[in-house]
Every structure is written in structure tokens, then in C-alpha cells.
Amino acid sequence: MGRTVTLVLVDGRGGVLGALPPFDVEVPWWPEVGDIVAAVRDRHGIDVTVLRLLHTERPAQPGGHVTYAAEAFGPGTASLALDPAPSAGAAPVDPVSLSGLESLGPADVDSAPEPRRAPWAVPGGPAASVAWALEELGRDDAVAVQQRTWNLSAIWRIDAGGEPVAWLKQVPVFFAHEAPLLRLLPAAVPGLTPTLLAAGDAGRMLLAHVPGEDRYGAGAGFCADVARDVHSLQEHYLTRTRELLAAGVPDHRFELDRIARVAAPWLDAIDGLAELMDELPARLTAIDACGLPDTLAHGDLHPGNVRESAAGRVIVDWGDSSVAHPAYDILRLTGHLPEAEAAALIDEWAARWRRSVPGCEPQTAVALIRPIAALRAAAVYQNFLDHIEDSERPYHEADVPDQLTAAVAAARVE
Image (tube, rainbow, N blue to C red):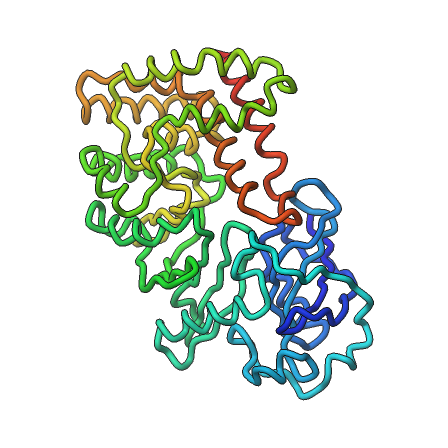
């Protein structure tokens, strides 16, 4: 499965230049744009920066026909007259006008300001961020290559000498705590998290390159190693949650009111949700009685957020982190595993916590918290929806009812 892509090209002021003919790329996931940028350069000889999603054929990813706005660079664009340097580290384009690109067709894009639009989703925004990153890196031979863009982040790989040396990551305001947190974590467990080289305005971070590969779909053995790594970190912060909160890490310790607000519009539509919400206060009290303290939770601890090399493992993408119950992370880490393998890892996790916190009841806490983990995920997705413009809602629209339904299902199998 791949994607069919249409790019609507705009200039540096947002003026519409036209739409390129649709083309196919192999990667089906909508935020991934590296292959799109490469395909346009190969097919049309121009450099583009993908800005944002305009509309999609399908209600949710992956695949389908996806249309994006993209800023074009080269003689003939209005942006060149304003700034003769190609944006985002793009290589200079041969002096031919884009008006000579006969394949451009008519297109219409609403360029009116949108208060929820990310700063990297407007013309000139990516160029400013890349310029900041290259200046912070301080290498004359560095070039930036766009990798991903959507409402939750913009990611650029920075190469020098033909090798990756750093990454530019830019995040929305509700992930602004990621940079301060990355400054704290090396003191707890050195080498387990990415090295923050610099942090700037508008959610910009410059991160040192982490060698290795992302371990999407990794099996139980790898997940067991990650669980041990994370336990060391969480044990460190059992008595240091004030440090986390002072760094801006969100406090998500069983936010009953927040979950109730998200669930309210769906109480009549999802069978069993009202009953689950009615018994939620008693469930929270029972979890608290299990005696497992809150600590640092990664928030999205799946194997794809762990890079592994011969040097070891590095856990990346701390934007979803919070002060919360540690059971959330073990449930996320084991969620893709066969039931027996997941249960064995949870048993190991529980044994570690009984050693760290004598008298606690981790197994009981995990059983009770399963439905709440899904309710909490629904609240996270609703927060995303509350902060993004309408055209990007397909990224998360189905996630809220899906997670609320999953919460009910988890409660019914107890």
C-alpha cells in the first residue's frame, strides 16, 4: 500500500502557483514527506517543502489520495524575488521559471491566516527553523532534508559529509516540555535519551543524531529490555516529581474531569460508556489503594520510539510524557505482543515494582487501569483535535471514539 499525492505549490507569500499532476509514493503514512520531496525533484527538477495537509480521499490514514500544500523554490517563484537563497537548505535550482513547468494545473487554496496553524506549516516557516538549526550546528557543510510534517511535529534530518549528524524537531505548544525534559533525563540514566544540542523559540529543538534503527514491531525480548530501562528512569523520579513539574511536564495524574469532558458527547453513542464513567471514581480509588506512586510516564512507549544500535538503546519522542501512573507505559509497550508474552512481561514489571515499592500491588493496578489507559488516550487525541485546523482533523478524528470504545471493551473483559 502506498499513497497517491497531489501537491498544490505556493510561493513565499502563500500565492498559489498551481497543482502538480498526481503521483504515487511507496510510504502510505501521511506525515512522511521525504519521498514526496525526492519525487518532485526527480520528476520536475524543483525543490519543495511540504507545508500541510489540505484534504484526503479517506477519513483516516494510511494510503489513499492525499493533497498537500508545498512551498516551491526556484527562479520564477515570487518567493525568490523576496529571498534569493533557496529555503530550508535546498540546492539552487537551474534558472528556469516555474511558469515553464507545463504540468502545473489550476488549484485553489485558502491562504487566509488560521490561528491554529503550526508555524512550520506556513510559507517561510520551515526555512526559518532550518536556518536556526544550521546556525546552532555551526557546520558549513550541513544540509537539511525534510522527513515529516503534520500537526504534531516537523522533522528534518541534517546531514554533513554525507552522513546524518543531527535532527531538527519542531513541536506544538502542548509538547513544549520535551526540550526541558531532555535536559533533565541524562542525570537520571545517562545515554537513554537523545542529546539536546539546542532549544529555540516556537518549539524548535536540535537533537544529536542517534545511530541505529527504530524497532517498530520488535518482539518480547526487546520489549523486556526497554521495560527494564524505563524502570530505572521511573524509579529515579518516584521522589522527584517536583523537578518534572517545574520543567513543565504535564500533570496527568488521573484527571477525572478531563476524561469526563471528552466522554460526555459520546455517552449515548457508545454502549457501556456511561456505566464505565459512573464507576470511574471507585476505580480510581482502588488504583490509588494499590500503592504504586506516580512518576515520569513516556506516554507513547512502543518499540518504534526506541532506537537500537551496537551502543545500546535510546528512547525518543518524549512529547507525550507526563507525571502519571507507570502502568500506562507497560501497557503501551506490550500492547502489540501476543497475550501470553505480554502477560509475562507485565509479571516481570510487577516484580520490579514490588522490589522498588514494598507492599504495592502492581498486578491489581494494571488490571484496574486498562480501561483508564484507553480513556486517557481518548483525552490526548481530543487535545490534539482542539489545537489543529480543520483540514488536519483526519489525522485524529476517529481516534477519540475508537479509544472510548476500547475502554468499554477493556472494562468488560475484567
